[in-house]
Image 1: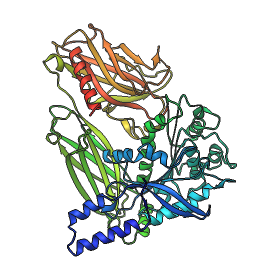
Image 2: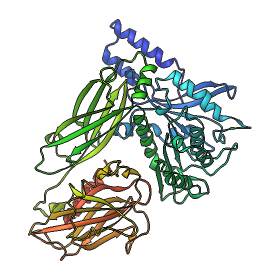
Image 3: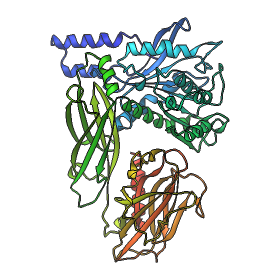
Image 4: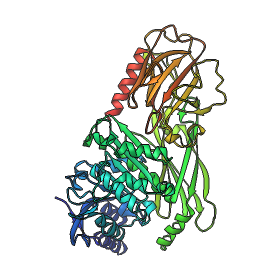
Length: 580
C-alpha cells in the first residue's frame, strides 16, 4: 500500500513535535527518532491545471530531511513508455540513492518521479498537455511543498527510454527551469508533437548549449543507441562543437539491467552540476597510496563560490543565516561506511565578510587512524547556506610490503608513476624504451579512480579520448621467486598494452598496436616470463592505454607482481570483499 500525504503533512508533524519538546513531554532524542520515522519515499497528489484533474508523483527525500532546515536541489526522473513512477519503486531507486549519498558519490537531493500516461512522451499532444504538466504545474508545486533551491542551476531532469526523450525535450525547451539533462538508453531518434531532441540541440547557440550539464548513454546492442539522430549522433555533435558531456556506450541491450548499471553516472553528473551552481571545489590527498613508512596523509582543498548564485540564494532565503563556509572530512570503511576518522574546519562568514570567490584549506589524517584496512574512502563535504555539497571521494590504499611467506610474496606497484598524454593511432612517444627520460612527466597515482579534470596537470582530461603512457621504475629483491609470476594490473578504461623492461607482456583491447574494442570492466592479469625481471636490480613497467569514449583512465587495482600463492590470496580477498 502506498502512503498518500498532503503538502501540510511535514509542517504539521514538525510543529507538533516542536511543541511537545518545548513543554517537556517529548525529549529531543525522541524527536529525532520520530523525525527518522517519517516517510522518505512515497506517493503524493496535486491538481494539474493543464489536464484539469488530479495527478500523482513519487518523491524521494534524503536521510536527515526532517531533522534540519536545509534546502535541497531537485532531480525530476521520467519513466519509460508503458510505465509509471512505480517503475522506480520496483527498481529500488530509493535504496540506490541512499547508498550513493552515504558513500559520498552524490550530494543530498530530492528526487521527483511524475506520473503521466504510458505514452505521453512528455510533450503537448492530442492526448494531453504533458509538457505543461511538468513545467507549469508540477515544478511550482514541488517548490511550494518542499524546501528546494528554486533556481535552474539546482534542478536537473533525467529519463529512461521515453523518459530520456522527455528529459532532453523539456530540458532544452525550459532553460529557465533546468540546468542539467540526462538520458539513459533514450529513444532520442523519435519526433513527437513536432519535437526532436537533436533538432532542438542544433537550434541553440554554442553559449546556450554550454550552459547545461549533460549525460547520455546506450547499450551497444540497443538499436536506439545508434539510430539516426539518437544517442551516438548527439554525442558526436557535442564532441564536434566542444560541448562537455558525459557519455557511455557499453555492452548491453535496451533493458532494466543496462540502465540500472549506469544510473549512478547521471546522478553524479547532476550532483556535480548542482555544486557548480553555488559551490564547486576539489581536493588532493598525498599520498593516496600509503607505504609502510608514511605516518600521515596531507589533504588540501579548494572551494570556489559562484558569487552570483550565492547572492540569489541569499535573496531566496532571507531567513537563512548560515553564511559560514564549513568543510568536513571523513575517512570511512568502504564496506560498512563506518567513520574511522573525521575532522571539520570553518572558513568563516564568507558571504558577508569576504569578497573572494576562492578559498583554500587543509587537513592532516594520521595513518594510525585508518586501522589495518587495505582500502578506505576519503570524502570531503562543504556546507553553506544550509546546503551540503560533496567535493568528492577518493580511495586511500595501503601499499603492501614484500613478505616472506609464499602468500605474501608480491611487489605492490601502487604509488607514484610518471604520466603523459600521447598521440593515436601513431604513437609519438615510445614509453616502453627504458632509456626514455620521463623526469618531466607528471607524477600520478593510478588504480584509484577515473581521470578527472586536472589529472596529471591536464585540463579537460575527464573528456579526453586518446592515448596516454604510465611508466614506473621499481626494484625486485634478489631472492624474489622466478616462476609462476603474474602481473595484476587492475582495470583500465578502455584498452592497454603493457611492457616490462621493454618487452610486451600483455595487451587487452589492442591487436598489434591497433585498438579493437573496449575492455573497460576487465581485470588485467598477465603472465611474466621467468627470465624477464632483474632480481636485485631496477626494472621498468610501462603501460600505453587508450580511451575510446566516455570516462577513461586506470581506475582500479590491484597493481602488482604476484607469486601464484599471493595471487590466489588476493583473489580470495577480492571475492570476500565483493560479497560483504
